[in-house]
Image (cartoon, rainbow, N blue to C red; front, side, top):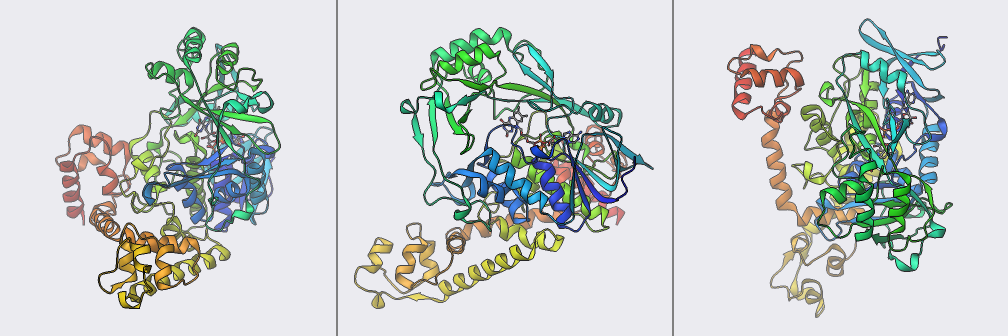
Length: 621
Ligand code: FAD
């Protein structure tokens, strides 16, 4: 049967990539359909109940600045908030929210169901419809055909998914969900480069059987951080603590004895796992000299007793899982509610994607999320937003967009993926960004919201709030630049209290704020308060304190920009560029970089090769 309504964009998969993709497409005005296995699992967190963290929190803020859902859902579902690296510089500070799994999912579902222009349909997609070499829609499990100009595929860990617990294994998309085998087989017939990756999750614990008295408590931060630029602390549900414990020598011995029944160490699992989120057996083998590993016991929600033991992801047999958990302090009598497991799944070489995330081999088809070789909800959501906006732009005949590396962590991630590909699950870190000082969580809106507005992603409410904030920052910065602080006019002891020493001569307030020991709140005791919001005060302070670094960073960005933006023609055969080695030609032909900047980041493409490329471009002009 052919479904009677036509769509501009169809998004397959209601995970983190899929929900941001369909929301972005609909916000841009595209008639959008979300097709997913089960409406109940829209926004489901397959693994740890947490959003954000270092690098990942930056992505969440960027998604939010572009009008996305993830930060809102984290604010509505977050049961413990912390600012990581709070004592370090603003560039590496990151927000992390422990989420109530059910509340987070409900928040995402609410946003999806209330988005104008977005329809949802529950059914597995088994096939792609291809017309004249372009994707023209999808066919579901029961044969319903949905047509659209653009299709975004976000099937996560489901493509040919195989679940492992010890040497037992079975097909599955994640525990309790079916795999997408027909779609995986269909995609393998198409000219995509397919590989296998693996990820894992720990067993879950019944909180009623945990001895909390034996554990170290970790409360959230006060004042409580907020994720969304439009969010408010009043949106947060009741806040709770996490708990800390450790593995020990007995745990490690139990794990070592179980390795002969580990699917990872007996060669049953072929897929490569995430380096930065290793299983507990991996940690024991790789870091054999470490006496203990930290475990965070994280509540799964306010209405459940389940706990997520962060740090002991495992695919060892269940009997070994039970023993290893019960060897840990505080967990001696613990009941396990679910076994840990590993999952292997198909992913596609992201070098086969344009930076818009459209596939190079099949026009009209976009890939986003775990299927591009990444791991993590935030990485998936950021790609989903990018793919969704570009799919909508293509369907509506508008210009697409992707951020540069100096504009956003989203830009860093996409450039890394499409330029270098990945051999192991890719996750975001602040160290991946060369322009870290500029790409902060706190200024994601200043970097991206105006672009989002132009693209049609940012609604009126967000825009009005953003403009008010931008103007307030400007006004307050100017007030402090214009304001002279004169020693003679200060009450006795006031300067010493703020500066730690008397003020020698009259100085502009903005200059005082540059001093490391002076914070904004203290400065207002000398110059009065303008009653600005904390986020405005934070920006003014960062702009004052880091002005020198920021200027230098802007200079570096401008310098690299010239090359970065020089476009390379699509379909250019690099064998026609004089002087390039066969190896470099092959690499450039493989990646087909969009710009000279991207070409320069392909491993093995030398500065000399870039010079030859620039000569070629000049000749062609
Ligand atoms: P998913 O969240 O997997 O969503 C895919 C969606 O597509 C689902 O709704 C599914 O029902 C739907 N779907 C699939 N195929 C079809 C089809 N044919 N038709 C219709 N709908 C379809 N991340 C970490 O950062 N750290 C970890 O430690 C970690 N461990 C993990 C452990 C396990 C066992 C699993 C399963 C995942 C783990 N992850 C981890 C990864 C994290 O869950 C993913 O990165 C994230 O969920 C990816 O989002 P996504 O939107 O790409 O896919």
